[in-house]
Image (cartoon, rainbow, N blue to C red):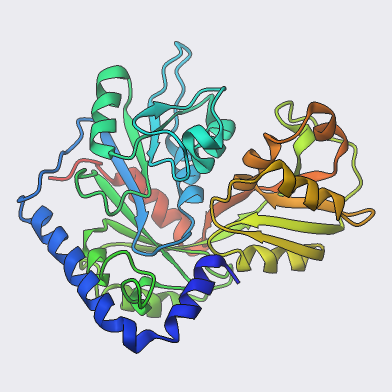
Length: 367
């Protein structure tokens, strides 16, 4: 059970005691949104076209796979050495502050694990930046990188100081926002009515065979809070073939035997879907669960490797790979049986064309 889910289970036993606190919390967030909606709190509309990806829920809803999906669709690298697409996130878990552009010397401690993952994967196609104050960071981007044509805002749905041109709201199929409550009685960052700010809703982590009938039922629930006519899309997670730590950055296949027995290592808000997939595809011997955005130590790695059964491999997530890999010596990277499992967002077949049309036709400039 994921760490966020565990927390909720503990809190849910006190639901009736926490409900008044949650109502007060919801009133506070509604009040804040009212101030922005009525222009009593300042917000900016960037000169650069901007897509915001976010959610209403604490914990993972697949924002990074969605950002990667958009990078694959939009990122253009000019031979002149300029990047037309920029990603901007808070850089959760980093030990630095202020605006920062990712470079080859950065680590998870300096920019955060998810931005580091994006940099290691797409650093030759996009400019990866972090900044806890999004409005100020966008102004820096506009001034220092005038060639930028698109900014992808990661986890910025509640950052009302920026009016994005397109706002994508993600909702986890396994924990839809319309069935949740504000914190601490539930896991919502604000009330469900916040969904009205979305230009499109993407239901993530769906079963690959989710029926059209079930999709309509979910859409009807979403339309109780979203604006009329806002498109609702459905997507699943597609796990790809494991990648050996040793094959990066050369990307040359390593002559290892096919993975069978694995020990899973994860630092996620909810690792249950990952564990279910690994259990289905491999012989899962053990699962070392850590907190979301966990900062691994060398002692953690040594303990995992020293207890690894003969013939087994360590399998982890791409987000955890960038942190574990930094702890290795070159010799260990080449000889230890360490793999990460890439994951991608994949629209369900009946939604793929519609989502592409929406992204194609969106003007990215609200009138």
